[in-house]
Length: 248
Image 1 (cartoon, rainbow, N blue to C red):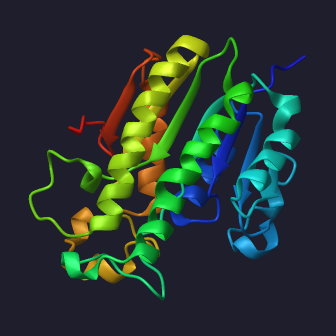
Image 2: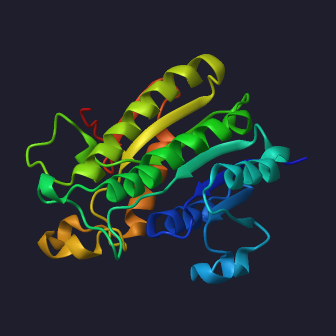
């Protein structure tokens, strides 16, 4: 009987999330891919329907109870996940933009950005613990950002986004320490994808050189390569798209 080897993508309808779903579907070593999004598969617009035999698409509004419902569906596959990508990210919306100066900081913006970029990934890592723990290596990548590096902050601004990613990195660091004690098979990566041609970066792409604006497919290929070659060492790795270490 063929061993089950599952991949899980959370935030699967976004640019990088959908590209990771495609990468995992193309990987013959992965037997099934689970994708989770606020949108259902029909509304995702990613054309995965022809691969339904290998793909299960689940929906969640990312409340804690909804996330627990997703985990309950996945429980039968506990211990079989070798790849997990948490691809949530919010930088701007119709009602908010990154702060250019401290006068732009608002309570609403802080709450919205922290909820998406920090709280939801932290809750996923808590809720999924029993599903990821097992005998086989499970590489888990969470989308972070270089602007979340405190040491690398030389320009200021973008208060909410920087803070949310710095907080995410700290939570992932603590999670890595605890996972190393309680689920030694899990490796956690905080991943900086670079500026990617997605809705998240769209308003800011004009100042980015074409050689530094990456396609989601390129980023997904880079992350897949990192996940395939990283060591399960009980440490958090904060890496960019090229596999280079970023300071905290």
